[in-house]
Length: 138
Image (cartoon, rainbow, N blue to C red):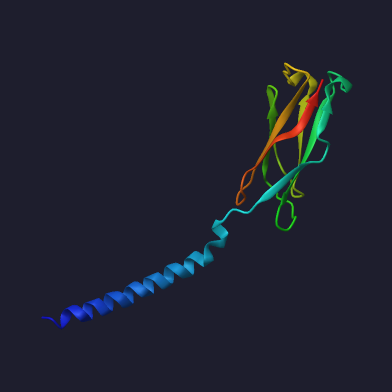
């Protein structure tokens, strides 16, 4: 009877090690599970003078989203520019660029100046946030 227990332990250890080796092969270092960093720039300028814009004119804000490591553009990233009572949302193209459009009448500014927040999200990347991406001045 005592002979059967050590053999079962050896067999279970071998089976367990084979299972562990299979799982480690599937995990593949886990590098793909770590989100990469990205950066977004407002290409059209960080200052908007509302007094210089007619009520019927649209305000276009160009945002470029890139991979922080190698500088390649990130496509299909959602960019949201919000604040002062309004927001605009769009998705980047294959060049990592998107256009966010506002009208002067969209802004509900209580003071002479304010800021728009930029939030960018993309699959496989950490979220990017800039609370002072664009400054608005009346």
